[in-house]
Length: 475
Image (tube, one colour):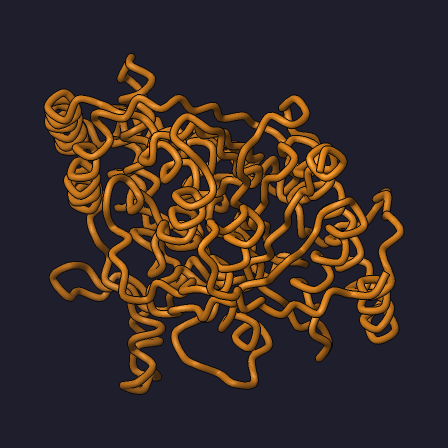
């Protein structure tokens, strides 16, 4: 089977309505950038998340390809953008992920809560946290000492200043006293969002969206006092200050700001009644019956950890009870990882196999990593085909990667794999990325020589259509 050479069809003007398949092609040929669109409504901005697509993207396909009450799935739901848009449109939402932060984030984003109740709870917990720090700092330090194993303690001490740890511990202690699960999850998410931001939040990290976050060299207090790195400061040029000098912010103040911002989004969730189901699980083995889903909109990870979600997520997850070594082991199970020990590769179709072989000849580990990725995506696409109703579509948003100078051609390879599984691929849409508005792993400066930056300018929306064989036979 030759690789699909996607061309968007020009539909002749006709009086008849577009078929589902024709509508899919027209949608993929239309506007997919959404650079000027407002994405801050409802709960979409509750928490930063690497490389999430704009909510207008799933909304467009949900509105055009489904009816109220039908079922929308995101099997790699990440920040839950597709699921929230499904609920806002009155569709039943189904989501699956293995990342603990993704699960908590999506659960909170989809849960309607009484704004006054949340606001009152916030006031009391913030007041108690501040009082605990002021009146019993030694007790706070004792709680810190008892919280982690040695490896996690070392991680926390490296990435968080001592003053920051005290405030975070006091906040977390009060959050954990909340007995209502929904309220506790809401405040845990706000707590996480004070840490995980593109600028590194209240940690000593810069650019948590980067593949490898780096620790600041100089830390100032809010008043300008040098708390760390006084000897380094003199060696930095004026232009380097932005990348190496950080003002230490109060976690209590940042947490309060985040809660207030998130409270605004609760209003738009209040009247939602469309059902939703979340599952902790792998997209390669979905906990769903066959032919149960009306539409899939998803965005798989990049190959070979080009965007390493866990490297950012662990900064808050260690505070929320996940030992650092356990998170490292979990990271190995994510689609797109580089660990290939005892991995069962699948036979790939011709074009994907050719790409893997070209990379393997230059770099055997990288070749094995991309083979793992396409193997895992074969299983995931097979599951999508199984759970999707005939005559319906899956939209798979992907970015390509460059390995040893070779483009992995992810959009073409996944389209080809989808065809071998029974999908038709009538079109592939192109999205030009707005880098200034996405949490992308590209650092502060544009570097045309950087491979990681070269592959972050466009995304592709693969239209996978599951033909209705029964309908064809009837005709």
